[in-house]
Image 1 (spheres, rainbow, N blue to C red):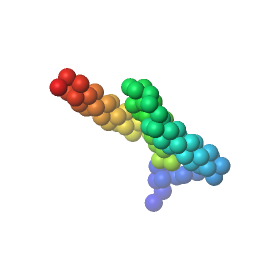
Image 2: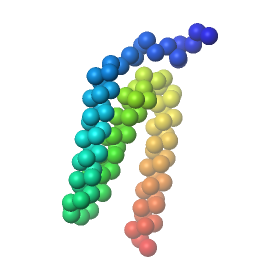
Image 3: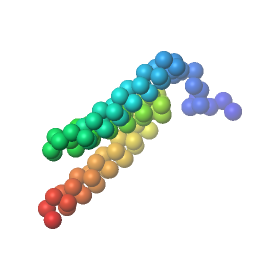
Image 4: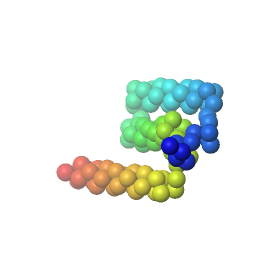
Length: 98
């Protein structure tokens, strides 16, 4: 079975790149824990969500190899992310105006 999609020779990532991403994920996790302990008011949520977006993009692009996928897969992933963002936005408006 010779499938071009399963050919991993196009995007070999080194162990050093994986270690660098892993260490950066640990650093961002410790920053998130530190921010949660500080009294930053409404900025704490914005910082935590920003760090979560950075961490999820690292995991998606490096560990899940999304940046090497076809364009149609990236489009469907973007549509799914946009749908979740709209659902969160609508839910937050419901929560704010109770």
